[in-house]
Length: 340
Ligand code: NAD
Ligand code: DAU
Image (cartoon, rainbow, N blue to C red; front, side):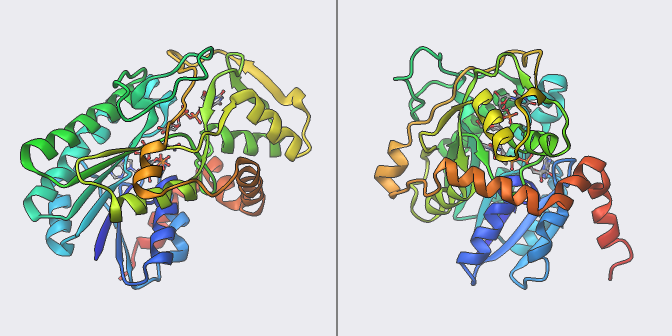
C-alpha cells in the first residue's frame, strides 16, 4: 500500500506520517510538500532514513509535477493535508488560499481520476460550518449543519469540500472528508494560538489576545485527529463526511492563563489587541457519527495533552527558535544542495 500524504511537512501531516509509519510497517508513505513558510523539513528528520518513506518537494497546484509523481509511484491512497491554514494570513491576502486550497485539491483529484486510486481523503475543518453563538451551549456542528463560512480561509476549505463531493457524484471518485476542530500538540507552527503563547511566554514577550479573549475553540490533541483519519481510511464509508472533535471547549483567555501558570509567568504579559476581522465566536463539534460508525473516541484529556505539549516545546526549543529566526527555511538547501 502506497499512501501520498500532501502537506506532510506541516503540523498535522507530520504527526500523521509518524503515526502511520509507526503503526503500519508495511505501508509506503510518500510526503508531497511545497515547503511554504509553514512547512519545515527538519520536522521529518527522524523518518528521512526510513526505507518506507520518501519526501518529494512539490506544489499540489503543479499539474505536471503531480502527474509525474503519480506515474512513478502509483499511490493507492491520497490524504490531502496541504493547505494554507492560517486564518489571519487569509484575511491579509486571500489569493494563495484559493490557489492551493481549491485549485490544488482539483489537481490532486484529477490525478486520482487519471491514474486510479482506492481512496482520496480530504482533510477539512469545522470552520466550514461558520460559528455558533456563545449563549447557545446546546448547539453543535453536525455533518448536516449548513456550510456557512466567515473567512477567506474557511471559504476556500468549504469550496474544496464541495468540489470533492462533486467529484464523487460526477465521476465516482472514492472520496471521504473529515472536518476536525482545533488541534494542538508537537510541531504546531508558532503563529497559532497555543504555540505562539508558549513561545512568547518563554521569551517574556507580550501575549496578544484578540478582542476580550472570549471566543471558544474545541481543542483536540493532534494524535487523536491522526487516529481518526486512519480509521476513516480503513473503515469509513465512501462519499461520507465525518466530523472529528472531543467536546473540549475552552475560551482563548482561559488557555492563555493556563499557559502562564504552567510556565510560571505573570498574567501581566497578557495584552488585549484589536480583534480579528469577522472573528468566529464558538466552534463545537458533535462527533456522534464517527463514534457510532467507526468507534472513534479521543484518548487524550486536555489537561494531559496541554502538559505534554508544553513539555514538548520546552524540550524542543531549537525547533521553534529556528522558525522564529527564519533559519529553518534554509534547511532544504542545506540538506539537498549538492546531494547525489
Ligand atoms: P500547516 O500550515 O501546519 O501545514 C500545511 C502544510 O502544507 C505545510 O507543510 C505547507 O508547506 C504545505 N503546503 C502549503 N501549500 C502547499 C502546496 N501548494 N503544495 C504542497 N504543499 C503545500 O497546517 P496544519 O495545521 O497541519 O493543517 C493541515 C490541514 O488540516 C489543513 O488542510 C487544514 O485546513 C486542516 N485542519 C487544521 C486544523 C488545525 O487545528 N491546525 C484543524 C482542522 C483541519
Ligand atoms: O477549527 C479548526 C481551525 O483551527 C483550522 O481549520 C485552522 O487551520 C487552524 O489555524 C485553527 O484556526 P483558528 O483561527 O481557530 O486558530 P488560531 O490558533 O489562529 O486562533 C485560535 C483562537 O485564538 C482564535 O479565536 C483567535 C485567537 N488568537 C489567535 C492568535 C494567533 C488570539 O487571540 N491571539 C493570537 O495571537
